[in-house]
Length: 122
Image (tube, rainbow, N blue to C red; front, top):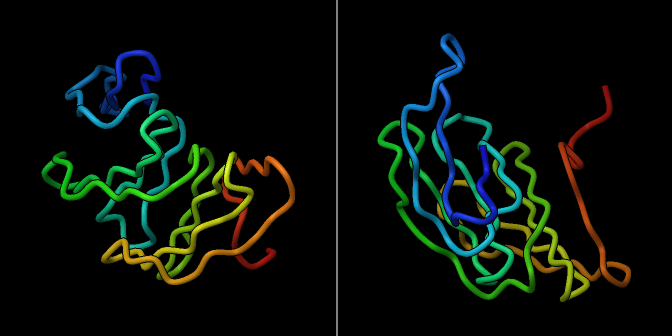
């Protein structure tokens, strides 16, 4: 669960529905996407213009990526993660394993993305 006002992510045990950890990230975490292999969680931090990358096994931030423009929506598909930059009118395409920027795609003004907004249709 993303905690926008406390700048952290709560980890919930799905069997008991009880919190098991809180992970500090950047300011105003807003979107989250788990990589296809289930090893990394990408969290957008709107008010830091950053993305935190959390190791799903250790529940620790392994890197913080910068250079985003009010990142909001995020989705993972295959070997990429796409971050929608609301104020930069773009989407950043990242390598899922390393977080390296692969491409920047220009979008319409104030673009936003929520949920699994990339991928092949069913």
